[in-house]
Image (cartoon, rainbow, N blue to C red; front, side):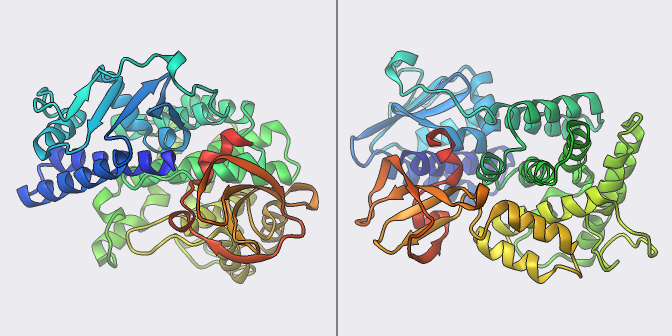
Amino acid sequence: MSELLGKNFLQALSNASRSVANADSEAAATDAVAALQGAVEVLVVGSGEATLSIVEDTFYLDRKMLAHASTAFDAMLSELKERKIDSITLMRGATASDLADLAALVAGVSDDLPAGGTVRLNESGLSPSDLDVRPLHDLRRPYSFSLDTLREVSRYGSLHLDGVMAAVDDLIERGAADASSSMLLATVQNHHEVTYYHSVNVCLLSMALGRFAGFERDQMRILGLAALLHDVGRVVVDEAALRNPGRLGNEEWAQVRLHPQEGAATIMAASGAGQEIAAIVALEHHIRIDGSGYPELNGSETHLFSRMVAIADSYDAITSFRPYRPARTPNEALRVLLEGAGTAYDTDLIRLFIQMTGEYPPGSLLKIGDGRVVMVTDTSHGSRSGLVVRSADGEVLSEPEPIDLSDVELLSQLMVEEAGVDPGSMLESM
């Protein structure tokens, strides 16, 4: 439960900070701060106060590590560290004034500290020995490094493939090609940095598929590079268009449809020998197997890597929240992919992808016959194992329990909000 409570608070703080930084209307800023107040009240309901600490690039809520939230709010974590904030103590009855000051401070638009005493900075007195400090899963740090690499492209408008390749190498070295770990970590999302998180998730999923297909390391490196950069052209697209909750207008849609060409041109300008495939994938990843899609290919067959990335791209998009539609379960995403086999997607690769993931991919949240909620963690070798994350009476377990799912009765699939558990937060329990 700590993970979701901490994530909800960080999301509310992120929203309030952005509202202040973007000079939104006074009413919008007031609403964002009010939502932040609500998140704080939920956070402190038991003890009357709560402390968010930063230790070794990781968020902790009181003494519990927030592994998933640390990755989902990687940019905020870095911003807080830059502002020398290593703890935020929140009191019951935290005032709108103090929380507005906190949001402005996090946004970097004010140096005023909360003065009312209901939000206190750097006063926790906690040390690493006081916290539930345990090592983050090996994949989380290279995931954050990959995010930073993509942010650099957006910030400076230039692409240096050496840095991107270093990020891919780091992911491979830390086990990114392992299907179970990759699919769990690929559940991380951030609604304000959709393109960055989506790109890293597609990279993880594509490399997992490549390994399952028997690729050698050199092939994995180029596939990972291509997948990580497949949407690099979106840095030229207005972010407001990407977050538009309604249908895109003709001008916005025309902008979005240009991103494959923009991405390919950007990669070609920076690529060296053997790296041109990344430009091909950026250009082709929205072209369907039947030749439709965009841009028009004039009857030529798309590259194998483009077809692989297209599947990972769609899977992550379907299982992720978007302003214009809710997320769907991993099993529903597989059904959509299967329905598109032979028209939108390569049939053989779809078959391979489903063989890799199993019917209920790692990260799936399932309610079983006795009322407990389990999360699938491994579907390799024809078996299915998982963790019990919620008891039959609805209690979220602080220490998930291993379970063999081979013969259990399945009642239903659950979304994260229904289960009360973030799949990615379970990596440290595996």
